[in-house]
Amino acid sequence: MKTLHCVKEKTFTDSEKDVFAAHLVAEGISKNVWNIFDEWVRLSERPVDFFYLKAKRGSELAGLGLFLKIKPVDLRTSYAVLRKNAFRRFLGGGISVAAGNCLYISLRNLITANLTRPFFYADQSSGDEVMNAMLAYLKNEKEADMVTIIDTLNHDACYRSAGFAVYDSSSEAILDTMKYRSAADFLAAHKSLKKNLAKKKITVMADVCRGPVSETDRLQMKACVENSIDVSNVNNPCQSFYEKHIFNTEAFTSDDYVHIMVRVDGVIAGFHTYLVSGSSLGGVLGGFNRALSRNHFAYERVIIASLEYARAHGLTRVNYSLIDNLTKLRLVGKVEPCALYFYSRSGMNRKVFDATYRFNDVFNLAKLEKSSGK
Image (cartoon, rainbow, N blue to C red; front, side, top):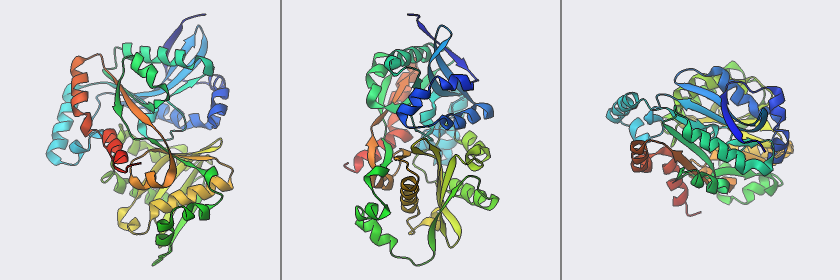
């Protein structure tokens, strides 16, 4: 049997996508799961560059990883203590530029559209072999000063044997729609929420839209995202790039996406956008305008509406990405434990990362989850 070798590429053809058809079926998703990453590859610009990591046996494609590099990596995108204080923000920016580190991260680290693990296999039986080959490639990539991957614990042994350090992460949040016959069943299991939703003082409604959204709605949704950034418990590792491009992607023009918007007196107070893929809804983006959504349970209404939509369209799960608030943890009902895996050839980088990780956004999300006692 030929030895696997890995290559970085910027193209991923339809015939190559067909190689992973069985993998997608096993995961309960469809071919459109590639679309958002295809767009990110096309939109790549400094300091953010998306690429496909391909594992090949000879000329045959055996595995795929979805990754991006950020150079220089801005520490402020991963550490709230550097974002929320003017002096620390200035200091963090200076340190980031001076260090000039190149970071390789998996798509899963972006906390968006997490419908699968970071790796795809042409043949599930060779999954560990493919994964080991890609981890070895990442470790030996001279350009990468650091590599971080958020993944489920199912393949923890592979990361450890490859020499990756393991750090706490919050779990993946999944709403199992088959658990409830209707929203009424869901509310029966959450009696306090049912009581709170019955207290209507002004007009609050959940609006579901599949496909393109109006320019008015797009602007209101963008305002919700901008409002959320300042108070969020976690930022995207390439936050500025993401904010700049997400509203210009097919997420707001294609029928593959569903938008659930909660309106307070007709104005969008919060929303979530989902990719409809196979039997799943995958959260892509969300935002809430605290000034409008406060005391109106906008977040809870979005979750209920996603359950109703999924049930009505035969979808079995809604993926809500990593747990980043206690409301999500309380309502989704199902979690998949994850960890953050880190590698660097530099002893200094390893020491700095280990010493500072307790201030990292992902670690703080893990602490938040543990504080719930669940």
